[in-house]
Image (cartoon, rainbow, N blue to C red; front, side, top):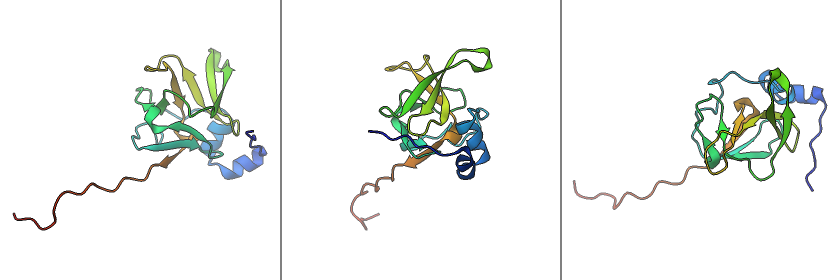
Length: 145
């Protein structure tokens, strides 16, 4: 059974940067095209910046043109969805299932096969990069020129 991570707001404040605290714990949004991962194409697993839970695989990331990292699906049951009526509109908020931190929102305008666009704040994520594979041999050493 999954156990929810619980900390006081003072603990979260001490562990997160001010920008991360504003997004993850106060449901803020970072400005578009400013985050570390909006244009990142590295392989790996995106984890929650607050608790380290696995959230999104890099092979589900796509360029939505919105300025925020976008994914077609979450990793397993890593996130929970909540109705969000803030800012005078109806949206679906995405939170980390492990710690309850705000990650971003999900929309129904993504590519196939899911049709989903998980629009996630960069500062809510940490990318656990896949180590680069060793280069393939290029042929015999010391051949004639």
